[in-house]
Length: 114
Length: 117
Image (cartoon, rainbow over all chains, first blue to last red; front, side, top):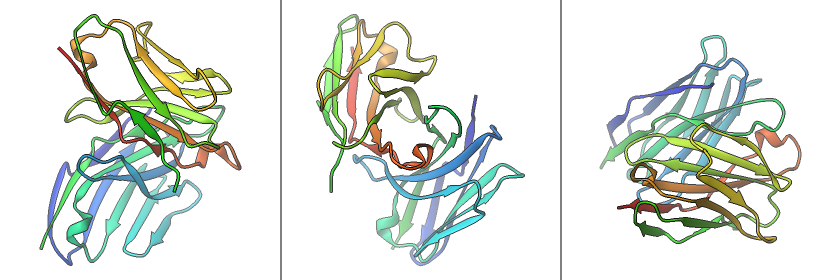
């Protein structure tokens, strides 16, 4: 089955710096890659996603890149703010049938220091 | 904005007891899921449910687990005889069935923290 690896497990940056979180996946049939943000004690919430027919997607300070050949995708947050501090999870989902399960990475605890 | 809700927020039970975790998915969603997250580990898929039947389950979802949509709004996860290793945060999620369903966002509930003593 699918396996998603995520790095780093913790990341500390200064406010205003950029943060990059990387994930790799194993199943070449995966075609949808969402990123979730989970603040302490709250539910995971989707912040951005990308489909396999796209190499990059941007939404204000957040961008995701996908390299299908290498089977890796990354989250980029620019001009980080303290409210960006949270755990970020990458995930992958394969296409076909009714197989809509998400396979998650282990998460990255991002701390933005003011 | 509609949200997935879950009750209770925290459940403490004795090993061997049955527990039922409850979820109310977003009203127009037709795909439902349960995931769990053991403390410090990744979120793991348990089961997906569509059209009143299980569409996929993981190897974690053994005979001790069952799901049910008892009415038009609730979606439940039952663990028949809890084990210590069932202690985890259990998340319910739901997604739409419109368009390309495989790309539809899964909306997560706030979770139920299950503690088995």
